[in-house]
Amino acid sequence: MDSFSHKARKRFGQNFLSDPGIIQRIVSSIAPQSNDNLVEIGPGKGAITALLLEACPKLNVVELDRDLIPILLAQFAIYQDFKIHQADALKFDFSSLVPHDEPALRIVGNLPYNISTPLIFHLLSYHGKVKDMHFMLQKEVVERMAAEPGQKSYGRLGIMVQYYCQVENLFLVPPECFQPKPKVDSAIVRLNPYKALPHPAKDVKLLERVVNVAFQQRRKTLRNGLKQLANAEQLDALSTDITLRAENLSVAEFVALSDELLALGVKV
Ligand code: SAH
Image (cartoon, rainbow, N blue to C red; front, side, top):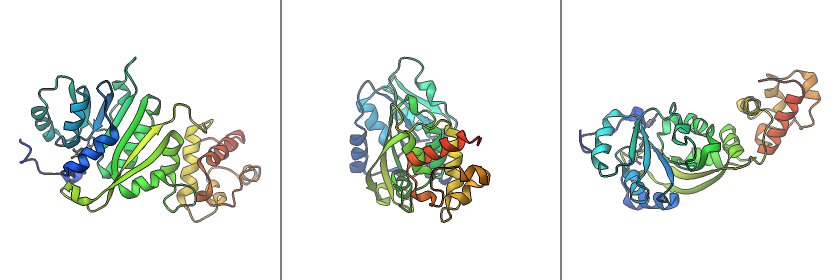
């Protein structure tokens, strides 16, 4: 199958970049270097891949759609260190790309939007082995990642991403830059995982659970959601003001709340 006869598939979230100016701008933001340990998720027909390879000929890509593999292989046959992993990025073991002394991973991708949140959570689990990540996502998802307390888009995604990473919302990409055009606006985000977490939780699973229950009813008080995890006595013993709403607590305050609950005997 050649590049022209491959029809974009909705179920794989395929919107291929077609605007050379935007592709160049994305790759300039990534600034790939020849000795980077770079991996691209969802290379598609290679729009970003081609420029990445020019700068960094050793490149791993993870692509789910089998029909795209021969297209990529033919297009980039001259690159001996170009490696295609035909796999689901949600299940792919990214630590296998950092076996021992290799430099930390740089992850890039125009991600399939239908799996972006679970994929981000999967990638966060490798934060210790990752140098940085650059993603194209639906604009609203990038806004949620970068949101601060009090903002409408502030919630579980932003808190857990900001727990591990510094977040930069870089620039917007309109639907006209893709073929076929998506129905939504897109944006490029940069995530820099912290070398040392600024607010490490004693039990990150409990933190995730606390954030989860707190935002299940974002209009209600924290006390309301936390009832699922703790009894009245434990809730009364907290120093965190749980008459607030979840959207008013910073990442550091959520960590403090989670650590307090742990000390009071609350388990995941
Ligand atoms: N990077 C290309 C394609 C973006 S479309 C471009 O910018 O033009 C998203 C790509 O992710 C498609 O190639 C799609 O097949 C791939 N994809 C979808 N789900 C995936 C998954 N679970 N794991 C890996 N790749 C996936």
